[in-house]
Length: 640
Image (cartoon, rainbow, N blue to C red; front, side, top):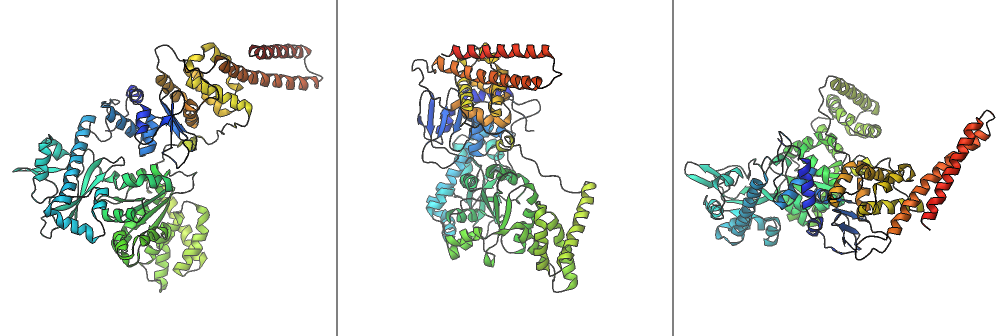
């Protein structure tokens, strides 16, 4: 059972993972001042570098798009992984075995070492198959198959396509020669074990490597090439293994993820060659399921990538289906999942029922692009597909058709759209608008009764709040205000150079002195953790700050941790001038005192206008005002 990774192991992964090295795998970095590196942001297109990394702090921030965080969040966002998956991936690079809370374990049920061996075996198998496709005379049938569908050697290389020899033991011998054990080959689904020993799982078939989102090969899909193949199934996929769960895998996602993220569009096709045809036609958002229907786990994967959030403009999910009965059935299954995300679903069905691969062959790349661009809303497809079962030329057919599509209209999430859809569908059915509206109303009452009885489907899983959602209600600091800018620079100094601040300094600053609520929340976290103590690393101190920070302002902490200060640092110490940080402390404290003075003066005016006011209380308030004024004057003198 998957479990929570122990907190100290998570911290160890963060401290041992060089954020600079991890980022450098994807971004070219150059020095940008003491302790900082800068490059082009991997999360948005830009020409001028605004992506900053600070190794000592263990944080990154893009001043162009606002993305920021630590090494774990970088891996999460770049590869669209969950927190636990990102930690496990970083631990794998470190060669570090993770410990889990009692009763739990890794997500895939295998430890780091075993998973690494299975992945390596699959990588070696993919190379073996690909080499056979390109160089083996026996594989000519596979090369011909690809050529007939418009794919040549460059396309085969891009997608890693291979050929499994007919002999039945060649892969087993090859992998054994590389040191893999029989158990590793059978557990990974590459080989089977019979009475005569080990045999290859795939024989005499064209083979597509199935990769996870990061590009690791975790399984294979194999197509029959010979009429006398003993296995009748046209496609044969890897069985469920510790590293391959077909319900969570989307073929082509490793190549499509960037386009899906950037365009907030996913195109779900039906087969491996359809994915290839779509990508080569310019539809780089195409993916396909692997021997199973599109389901909830696939939805979760895509939701993470397209940022499927209710407060954003809806992303687009386009399904391409064959025009036959099976394609229509698949489309209706997909529509049944439509309430599980905020994205808008569409269906694209080519004329004559052609799939994207056939369409590209017959009409060219532009036809595939047009197919996706011209997709109709899933709702419309679902209604028209449902109505096609009824003879709308008869009164009985219209009544039955109206009753069948009414629940579909009632299921529309945005109730404000229902009246328009009622009018539209009434025209499709050929009935009066009032009749259609009554049918939808009845469908709503039936659904309400079912919900009361607990007979409806479970509510879709609610995703964890995103930073954008959590930040709602916390206004962004207005940096045009010089006071807010001073607050920002003070927090930058505290987060980047905590050794310059004593406990007395932190206690002297009142949180109420911060004008910007977001700045106040960050300071609350800093004061809760306290100053950097001897023996504590800066990364560990920052980790405690992150834990104490509300989710709504977590991105701001990452930004402040790497944003450059507008002063020249001492080359020998790497620290800003002490008088600079002192002046910031005084400025923020002065604002707090000024606010108290203003409050006291307002109270005095109200008391002066009140004949029943207590003279003694007014004297006390006057003395308090004098004390505050002296305190403010002393602060001002301290920085002169």
